[in-house]
Amino acid sequence: MIRAKIHVTLKPGILDPQGRAIRQSLGTLGFDSVTDVRVGKFLEIELNQDDSVEAEAQLKAMCETLLANTVIEEYQYELEPHPSRHSS
Amino acid sequence: MKWGVIVFPGSNCDRDCAYVLANVLDQDVTLIWHGDTSLGEPDAVILPGGFSYGDYLRSGAIAQLSPIMHAVQEFARTGGLVLGICNGFQILLEAGLLPGAMLPNVGLSFICEDVCVKVENADTLFTRHYESGQVIRFPIAHAEGNYHTDPVTLAALQANAQIVFRYCGVDGVVAEQANPNGSLDNIAGLRNAAGNVLGLMPHPERCAEALLDNEDGQLLFRSMIDAVTAGQDKKQATS
Image (cartoon, rainbow over all chains, first blue to last red; front, side, top):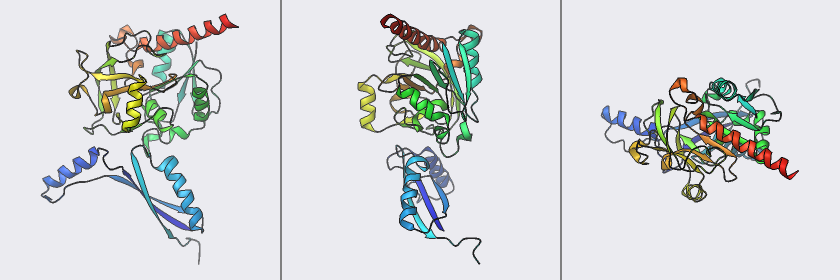
C-alpha cells in the first residue's frame, strides 16, 4: 500500500480572494508579520499499489484530469509506504 | 425544435429552462438524467445552473465526468448547439468545451442581483436577435463567476470575437466598477472557436417572460431556435 499526500494550490499570480481575506484577519489579530496567505487543498489518497513508479504515474494522471484544474492550479505530491490496516 | 436539458444531481435551474422553452416558447423539451449515456436526437442541449455534486472539489469538476457528458462532448464536436448557464458554464469549462476556468468572486460573496450586460457579438448562433452593443439586464446568482484564462487565450478570444457578453454599466460602458465578480476583461459569456458552444454566468431563463418584467433572456433562446431552423431549411434546400 502507498499513501499519497497531494497539495493543490493556485498558481503564482492568480488572485486568491480567500487568502487575502485571511491575511487581513490575521492582521486584525495583530500578526503584523504576515505578508501573504495562499489557500489550497490537501488530499490524502491511499493506493492498493506497491510499485512507487506506477503509483506516481497514476497520481500524476489523477491530478491532471481531476484533482487540479491546471488552468488556475498547480499540484505537488509525496508518496509514502502505508501499512495495510489488515496486516498483522 | 427539440431541446435536451441535462439534469445533474444538484441542478436547480433545469426546470426553469424547461418551463421557458415549453410554456413560453412552445418548444419540445426533454429532461435528460446525467447518468444516461444518450441524448436522443435533440437540436440543442442545455447544461443548466445549480450546484451539481454540491460544487465538491471545484464547481463543475465532478459533473464533467458524468456519463452523459461523453454524449454532450460528441454532440458539441459534431456541431450541435450547447448552452451552459451558470453552473452549466462552469461544467463546460471543466470539460474543456470552452477555454479557461472560474475562480471565486473577488468579494468572496455569493452575488444574486440583476446586472447590465453588453452584447459584444450579435453575429452568433445564440445572439442573432440582439444587436451588437445592446445593453440588456440579466440576473446573476453565483459565488464562482470570476473568469480566468492565460493572456494568449484571452487574446485569441478577443481576436475571434468569442467574447459574447460583458458586464457593463447602464450606459453600456464596460468598466471595472461594473464588474460584479472580478471576471477577466468583464467577461460574462463566451463561445468556442467553432461557435456552437456558449457559456454564460447570467440566467437568461430567469428573465424570459413579461410576467417577470424582463424578457431580455428570451431573445437568446429565440436566436438558437432561428439558428437551428435556418440550418434545417438550408439542409432541406440542398438535399
